[in-house]
Image (cartoon, rainbow, N blue to C red; front, side, top):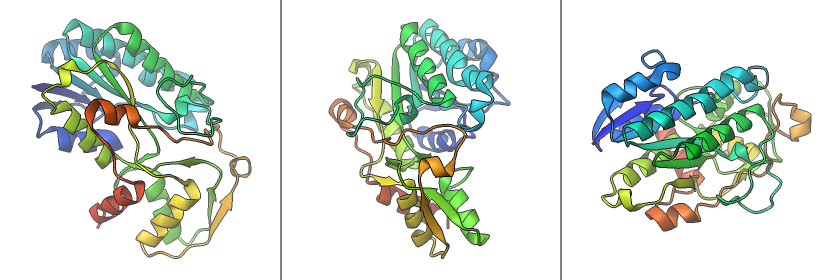
Length: 281
């Protein structure tokens, strides 16, 4: 099985590169090696059985002023990859986000809930989903939430850096979700792609996030405790924090469809975080 992976240097891509190497012949690309605007030639030459697209524009606040850049990577490039996947009859595995929802639903979101993104980032990811579905290629879209990794720019490392620098931490306490380890996502996707019955599974969107829930403030407390760091941690509202891009207040995703189709469940977010912390030491 030949697997073409995009976005190998990202948080999710690096975890996938490590995990997918055990599944088949892996062809990993980063942005320097693979121009997303001309990816067609690369796919035609590689003739992969599976394309795993982990490339994404994820700078949520910056996207508010860089709309074209966000849509270039998260929508237009996805449309091109999907068309090429169809041309070589490859399965396309793509990753989306809880930010396609407005967060006003009190219960966890299911795949059939109507998307209503609040931010440019969320809108660009939703357009990517729709372009992929319209292409007619075989596909699996995994919507993930609150992704972090042991390395790279993410919430965990931002909290650790601020605490070590002795800065006060003002962290939002009115948004809830499930912090999800990139390693856990990569393991789940690898298990799904290893499934001999995969070809019999329907194309579509599946929610894939850790079990349990917390707030960003609650996650920050867990990070500080796990690293045995003391810091002044102050809960604030989303309005008081004043981020450039609006976020959904409820980012909880219902994973029942994923469990039913593939028998896959991600561990509780605390378990995933503890594993990530061990990887950092």
